[in-house]
Length: 100
Image 1 (cartoon, one colour):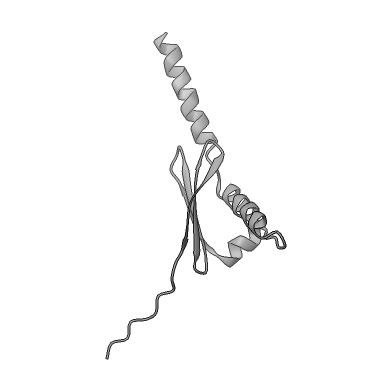
Image 2 (tube, one colour; image 1 turned 180 degrees about the vertical axis):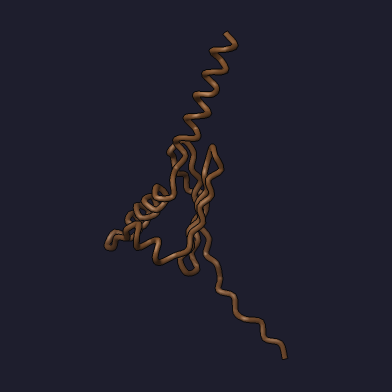
């Protein structure tokens, strides 16, 4: 019985590792979200890569992705091939500090 339980746990963990969303999956999700919000225009994954800055972190059992374009930043969290919207921020541009 213990052997079956250990094999089952190993298979579940392997499933978690293999189904972690990849970087390309996040770009497809952002493109789909953009198309949902802006019905008249469409962006491809390649255009998103060129236009903005992104950070992808694979944490073995889950992954995190942050994309920033101009002042807008969006974050996503992915587990078991599901991509979940985490947050969106509007970052104010910082003006340079001038001291006299």
